[in-house]
Amino acid sequence: MTVTVRFAPSPTGHIHIGNLRPALFNWLFAKKQGGKFILRYDDTDVERSKEEYARSIAQDLAWIGIQPDLVEKQSDRFASYDAAAAKLKEAGLLYPCYETPEELERRRSRARALGRPPVYDRAGLKLTDEERSAFEAEGRQPHWRFMLPNHEGNPFETKRTEVTWNDLVRGEQSVDLASLSDPVLIRADGTYLYTLPSIVDDIDMGITHVIRGEDHVANTGVQIAIFEALGATPPVFGHHNLLTTHDGEGLSKRKGSLSIASLREDGLEAMSVACVAVLTGSSHAVEPYDNLDTLANVFDLGSVSRSSAKFDPSEIGGLNARIVHELSYDAVKDRLAGLGVSGGEEFWNVIRGNCAKVQDAVGYWQIINGEIEAQAEAEDLDFLKAARRLFPDGDVTAETWGAWTNAVKAETGRKGRGLFMPLRRALTGLDHGPDMKDFLPFIGRQNSLARLPE
Ligand code: GLU
Image (cartoon, rainbow, N blue to C red; front, side):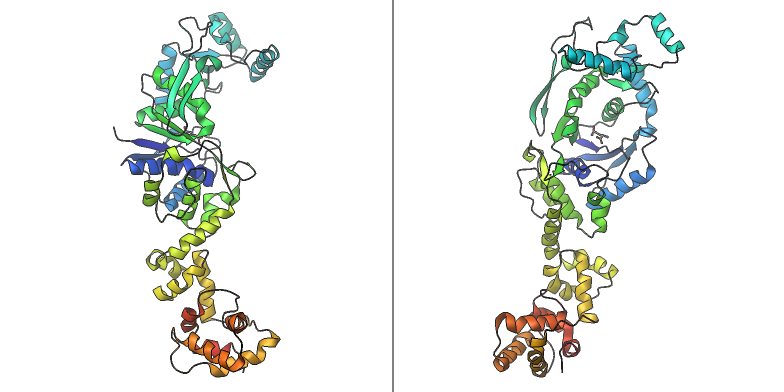
């Protein structure tokens, strides 16, 4: 069977780096096994789901390097959910209940007060036809619950029923179905909760592995029971830890600064975002990898930790700089052209070690092409005048800086920082930057002389 996975976001907001984790975990898992990746929009909530969010999710995934084999939308598939619901109703496994949310809450508090687990008592199953009609005459519509298989014929006599699965991340897991309330699959307004559509899709789309956040662990026992009630073999499950900041704060969809779109607009490399998303909270160090294939080769779900994945958003910047320092000219030439930087490969190779982001090239390009703000201390004035006089004749090459600074040293007696720093500042306007030996030929004679006092 072909490994088939899905990433199933609800298009109700922009995705952030935490949401990217299940996307990448699924993608890398499928890639490693020659499998298929489905992007499935869980958009049954028609009020909150928006086409613009679906588009932005697709754009974010494309930027990261994920190309789905197939894109599906739950809103196109209501007929399949209705058919599955009908099948469960016919089998007596989906039953109508009429309690209002307030009634349910009252019952739960009563159960808690009596020290009993607040599990739904299946009162809906006891209703007679007359009682149901009476509720409906009052204007109440039923919500529908799935009867968990936690009894041997009499649903009011439940018994411990363990559902177990071998989780790809967490190992052996089990849930006692007798400790859970029968889940509501259809709301009183006729809309589906996430559970049933997700299972129907997983079955129809041949999903072999469900890899998702550990906030879904509690759903898995119930979902396995529903897969089986629908006559399907459940997929393999894997639940990964969730990304939080160091103070343990979760990343909600509203955390704009960590949205994929804002990280992209900030000029970060897709691979630095991908490496932080995937490697944080695993036994691997958060190191730069240059593409998703190499990341797929080192990464496996078994290395994901069972405690939370804490990260400091500034780590992305540090990792980004390390990635940019190694980027080949080929990898950046179109972007440099877009930024108006046309210094070619040699220029890129000279500056890349000092670029934390690719667009930092613009600043260096301005240094060699335009005006800079003069940076000269009064006490360096005579020194800089002498340096101007001693600027070597002939072409400015990689030898020029050494020859020049030797001559300046011999005449002024300065050395070390006192020799180099005023020159760097005068010529570049900066305290640090590319190696002056390699950078000077780009600055050129004319600019250099113009930046030194006569
Ligand atoms: N739409 C669900 C979510 O975003 C999908 C969960 C799943 O992968 O089953 O949480």
